[in-house]
Image (cartoon, rainbow, N blue to C red; front, side, top):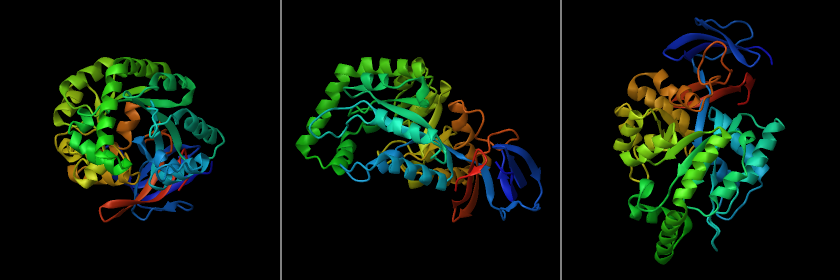
Length: 379
C-alpha cells in the first residue's frame, strides 16, 4: 500500500481535536503530528475533520437492498455490493450486518429463512476481495419463531459472527408494549386487515408460549459456540435487564425506558440507541428518546439502524449536544469497537488500523470527502 498523508486537518483524537496531519503506511497509522502545514504529496484536508472510520453494530440496510419492494428478491451479489458501497460513502468502515434467524412459515411467507444463504454469499464476496469495508455478521435471534434452533445450528465459529441479539417481539411487551402502535406499524407495512392483525398477534403469543424458553436458551448457547458477543433487545423493565445480565449480555440494543437503561449501566452493560431516534427527536414506537438518555449520561453507542447516513450525523449532533466532539465521535467508533472486542480500530492512535474518514461539516451534519479502510481509499 502506498503512503498516505492527510494534512491540514482537524483530527478527532480520543480526547481532543487537534490541527495537524496523519500518516498512513502499511495499513496502519504510523504518525500523528500537530501543525497546519501540507507536506509535498499530502492530501490537503482544508481544515476538514479527520476521524476514525465509523463502526456500525446493527443495521437492516442489507435487507433493504435484497428486498427493495415487498416480494421483490433482488440479485444478492448486486445487493451486497451496493450495500457495501453505500456504507463506505457515508463513512462506515466496519459493519455488523444484521440478519434474522428464526422463521414463521405461513401462507403469507413474510418470514422465510434466508440468513444462511445470504451470509454465504456475503462471505464469498469478502473472500474474493470485492467488498470495500470490513463485514461481520449480527444474527438477530427471533424468539417468537418456529425454526430458530435449526437455523442457528447451520452457522459456526468460522462465519465471522460478532453479535447475537435476543429479539423477543411478543405483542404487548418490550418495543410494542402498546399493541395499538404495533397494529399501526404492521398494518402500514404489510397491509393486514383488523382480523388478520388479531390472528397475527395470537400466533406470535402462541409461539412465545411454546418455544420461548427453549429458543432463548439455545440462542445464548449458540452465541457462546460462535464466540460472539451477546446483546439484548428492547429491554423495558429492570427484570429484563436482570435476565440479560444472567445470560452474559454485554450490549443492550435500544432499551425502551430510562429505567432499563439505568439498570443496564448498573450491570455494566453498554447502552446503544438508534441514530434515527436521536435525529427525529424521539422513537417511532413511542419509547424513550435517545436524547433523554444522552442527557442522563446513559447513551454509550449509536447505531444507524435503518438509515446508514444517520450514524455520522448523530455523532456530530451528540458532540454539539455535549459540547465535546470527541465524546460524540466515540459513540460510533471507540465504544462499539470496545464492546465487540475490536481493539485494532475505532481511534486515531499510532499503530491502529488505518480506518479513517475525512468529514466536511454541512449545516450541522457531515459530508464524507474520503474514506480509507486499512489504508486503502474506498470512497
